[in-house]
Image (cartoon, rainbow, N blue to C red; front, side):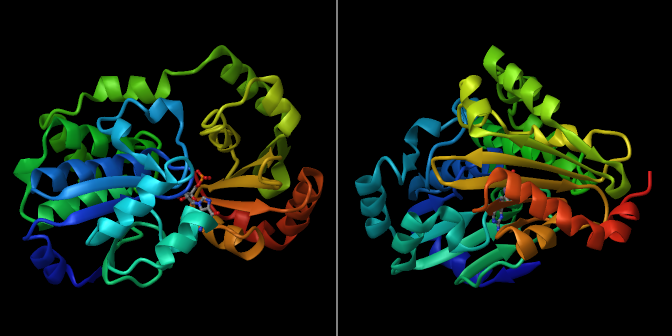
Amino acid sequence: MILKQFKELQEFLSKPQKVVIIGHKNPDGDAIGSTLGLKHYLDKKGHKTQVLMPNEYPEFLHWIPGSETVYRFDRQNNQCVKALRKSTLGFLLDFNALHRVGSDMQNTLEKYENDFALIDHHQQPDDFTYMYSDTSMSSTCQMVYNFIEMMGDLDLIDENIATCLYTGIMTDTGSFRFRSTTSTTHRIIADLIDKGAENDKIHSNVNDSNTYSRLLLLGQALTNLEILPEYKTAFITLTEAEKQRYNYEKGDTEGIVNYALSLKGIVFGVIFIEDEEQGIVKISFRSKGTFSVNQFARNYFDGGGHDNAAGGRSELSLQDTVAKFKSLLPEYKNELVSSYEV
Ligand code: 5GP
Ligand code: MN
């Protein structure tokens, strides 16, 4: 764990500040939950806060308390720039380096004149003035809970804060099943329920919001699934045309990669999604056990993340990206085969 200048930050926050709270590009449940959870907490402490996101986030996260107050850098650029200019402190949540907000917002953030405080659980964080970085944590939401505890303020956690933090812990742990889920995670979750998080509603809001066309897109993805048993690997592809055929909307492909990993005996699951607008193939990597997809994504696909969940991209065509991927596997055969013993 890296805990840098915490006492100074606590001292700084003992007076009312204007705080911007920033999440990463293509925000997920942990990014939305942690930024809004922290916002509700800091508001209660008497600060003025504004959450900034680089771009839109999936419909199934719009119900989260405070969601309507978020500014999007790609849509509300002026408001974002103004909020940054007026602010006295910037929190960076659920990402480890400024490039994770996308190049436009990165350029703006690089000119920021005040201090940044990072709270994040990704590997290899960049250096900021205040830092709370811990890669063993299930989620940034769990770290925001710890941060509130370190500030001596657990009793300030109300229904809104609890709901936000519950959501991010739930989504980042695959509903409390990944290895990063510890007994402490469960204790925190229990406390969040005691403080007002309605767990059944949160699960339902996030998971039971499928449209018929999204299920058909999932069907297409599963039809495209390819299994490479000798490498304990399975991967899925989706072309732009397939996405359009099923009225693709942001968030529709979220979680599909887990179907590859749900196959018995598979330890490495990947999804390649053609993105014509950006001119790239967006890739999600998931693994079980010791095979590090963070390292794999960093080495070959301009990405990163965690040991068992990472993302990346490729500027090759979908076909060439898959060919490149397949050509890399023989080198990792031993690592893959011994990655996870049931
Ligand atoms: P996902 O596959 O769900 O997009 O991302 C899985 C994990 O990898 C998340 O924790 C996400 O923050 C991280 N991640 C996704 N894409 C990238 C990327 O391009 N670069 C880095 N460094 N991390 C990424
Ligand atoms: Mn996270």
